[in-house]
Image: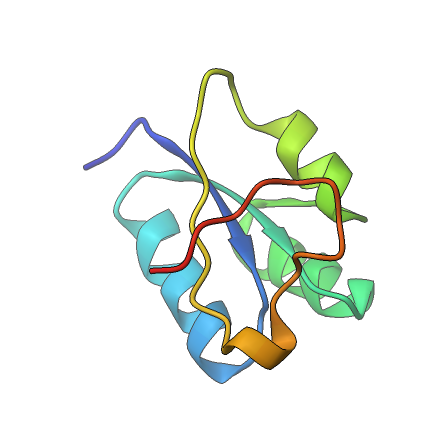
Length: 87
């Protein structure tokens, strides 16, 4: 599973733990949260990368790539120019 790049959006209890587990499995995780201090704290704790915006998250990932979202429809980040598909 290692040596893959993944962006994690949303670092609440579930998102932060998913990011930690993926990082421990060797994946290169870039984390983003609307409250940027959460991403910064997680990056300091784990050594993963933190992104300050959704655009910065996308720029940190190699292309070509795909994205997925596990947001409920009313909280989806679709207001951005970044393409997401529901999971």
